[in-house]
Image (tube, rainbow, N blue to C red; front, side, top):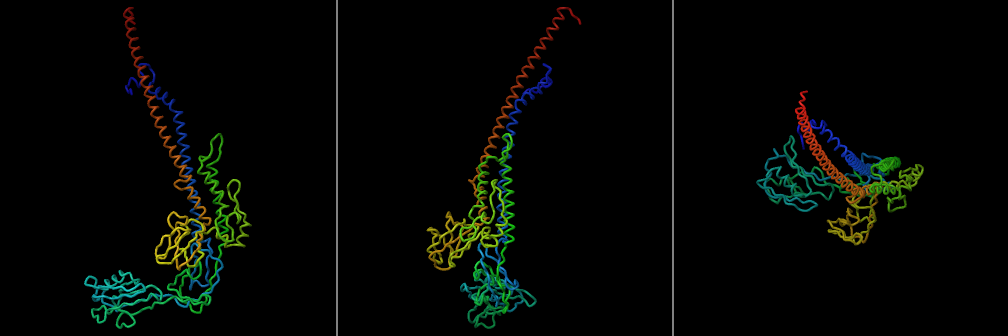
Amino acid sequence: MTTSIGYALGIGSGLDIKALVEDLAGAAKAPKEALIAKREQTNQARISALGEMSGAIDSFAAALSSLISGGSLFTQPSVSDSSIVSASSVAGTRLGVLSAEMEVVQLAKAQTLESAALAARTDAVGQGDLTLVTASGSFTITIGAGNDSLDGLAEAINAAGAGVQANVVVDTTGARLVLKGATGEANGFTLGAPGGTTSGLERFAFGPSVTGGMTQAQAAQDAILNLDGVVVKRRTNSFSDLVPGVQIDLKKAAPGTIVSLGITRPTGAISQAVGDFVAAFNELMGMIAETTAAGVNGAGGPLRGDLGVREMQRQLRELTAKELVHSGTGPRTLAEIGVKTNRDGTLSLDTARLETMLADDPEGVEALFNPTQYSSNPNVVISSAVGRAKPGIFTLTNLVAGPPASGLLDGQAMIASDNFLIAPPGSKAAGLLVRIDADTASATITVEPGLGGALQAIRDSLRASSGPFATTRDRLEEEAEDIADDRTVMETRADKYYNQLLNTFTAMERQVSAFKATQSYLEQQVKIWTNDRS
């Protein structure tokens, strides 16, 4: 490239060669640059619009899932005195009619022992063996020179894994060993020292025939309650196996006081949720319509004609007719409760129809929104399914409680873990976990997706690694790479053309300079020849 002062000033020709070359090169490059810039802008707009669509369906599904998981759309059990008993629905279950009376006679308690006080927690307790007997078995607690202290004894008991928690309590009287087991009469425990022990460990023994050992501060006992006239015992104060679908937590004993159990139906919350769902759905469809608009003179929304967005529109339009519940006699689709799809893909709500359905079958309407799961056999208890297993009805056969448990899911062997069975990976029920309480010939497991599950399934299919959104994204990314390559080629060609022009005009400048030099010489010679002194 020529950079001389003569070239820059155009001394020979009198022309601004630098500006002329830049103008000519720029004029040749400008239309190509504009075309590539337009392609880049269009591609970026499509990528941005796809990101917005992907984020919108994510947000819609997540908002609905959050609303459902919050429990405001579930029928909840109610109690007449929450200071005695609290009750809540078990996730994934469907409450029908609930009417019961309960009397809490006594709470479940854990056995608690305390030792006589020593001066300090580091004081020696004596060396030897103690035998801890619990519901889990017999455990030997060994104290030697390295752990001969209250702290060492507590650590040894905790390390045994016997289900007894040991702590050292320090107060104004000194340091004491405190032992606590699990609640329930069956979880009582003893701590024995060999006969004739005089090392000091005998101070920590406890049992029916032990004297001079630890003191029982509290005895282990079961919770006792009266449910509709039937006396029931439980090892803990929190349980979900007494009233189907209800988690019960006992707060205090109140003999003679009757607590009534009932239900509260969230009909108002469901009605509001349906209206909010329709509004949010229509907002999403409006966003889709904007990005796929036909436009004028061939211009339109950035994702006009995109197959991924078309698939999204198709699945969303079919949502009102999608079966959300596979069993029962209640409504199975949104259309049945008054949610209709308009010609443009938006939704409309027949409020009167919804209110009628809520009045006639509130449980059925509720089921459309809430994912549920249930077993046809009480000996087969679902431990995990909703949100993990795909919706459907699954048949379990040849069930053996074990342990280890065994059984078949639709003819395929399940995976055993103690008395639990896990659906094999790759099966349509992957994610299903059940507990087998007794040998059972067969059982049917039903997993209902509800609206949240159905919308999440649409989202997952669109966002899958091989789904329509991924296909569109890959295509747009490849297009962006092609545009970048075309820009590189264009820049290379433009530089080459610039240099060609530069070389051509530089050569011309040299020729003009040479011609002017010759002209000046001839003019001088003519003057000499003609004796022209002017």
